[in-house]
Image (cartoon, rainbow, N blue to C red):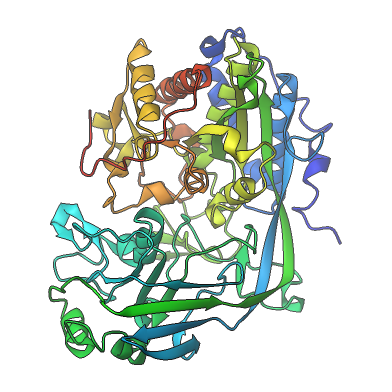
Length: 567
């Protein structure tokens, strides 16, 4: 029997004739970005008919067909699988046979630690390879949090080094409940932000890898009990090189620190007591990693990105692209019993999105009007504006990503299997939740948050600011969430990061979280359409500037401006 979520292409033709109406706005670029269009489109995308747009569901297929039908009407070019707006995303369940080892050499003496015997490697270690790291840095708790003046990496260059850290709970001066995301992502910070070649932490942490907003492997439904259990789920290439992030036992650390300025027993005592830890180089230490894993694909599930192209006007520059993106999936509907707990409603069967506001007990559908219905229809408005208006020099690429809520599946797949050369994408502008005020505060009515705009390219950052100043009513640009010690770590939690991790300059546009985030009360009736329209105009103006540059935005990689909010 065919699964409800596998017949997406059948939904594209012959279904949406009665749903599409032409706007009164004319096709004159930003002038065609109309509040009424956004409301009309969102009223369908976030309707009960789409049942919360969960990955692999018929509702997500309906959304893909609705978007594709509009793209066809606006005469954009299909840029997914050949001749189609849909790019098939293959979500693989993988069993791993991990035989990886790390050899520790201390002043000429060496010991070999094997997976499961003193060290634990991630299930996915990437491609088979062997390499040696001859610089090992102990970085205390492995945390940089300027807000509380805790800076373990201050003055320390760990590029191409192995970073070692201790203290699963972190230091006493760091609120574990407030900074839980930072604490669980110390390996990611060392490797992806500071350029370390490996990260080694204590056993209590495991191999934390919280890059996505929702994370976690999706288990198959229906006949899943007949499918072998997967060790991990991925959409990325299995032959990619990955920096190892491992957890280690006391025995490993005893040997590693055997000739260090401070003995491991004392370091562990201080870490357990959450006392200050020193930071030093482990002299005379080498680590040789032998990454050796065999993979067997035991499950394949299919979902789809929606991809469209508007060709640029310049004969040369049209072969380069400004990419715009949003995710069009959400978290679906309650399949189990809805019960009251502590004044809130628990939705059984769909963790980790379990709680909603009182008074919504009978509503089983998580409509996702703001998350990310707002980004979905904003991207439709941008595609129409560029398709029907003046063409900039560069081409424009529009990608509606699937599976963001499951771990950025669609954008990670796109970045590994791009329909255009990835090196030719000069910038990516991501839109996720732009329809509300942060925490429903009236004082936020003019505010939009920009994340990552200055991390890779300060020229892209400047272009966004110039674009804002060009608007008849400029918005307030706030960079709070761009702070590297932002407690929500939004830079890593939406689809833009799949591009940024490939070195592509990005800007993430959002208006922040609110009480209806991942609740069944995220409804169209609460969307601030006037504000949302202005933000879409800002994104259009920013993209247009980059698309007309005679050079790609400069990659100066200055990094985020810690603590700088509004300017």
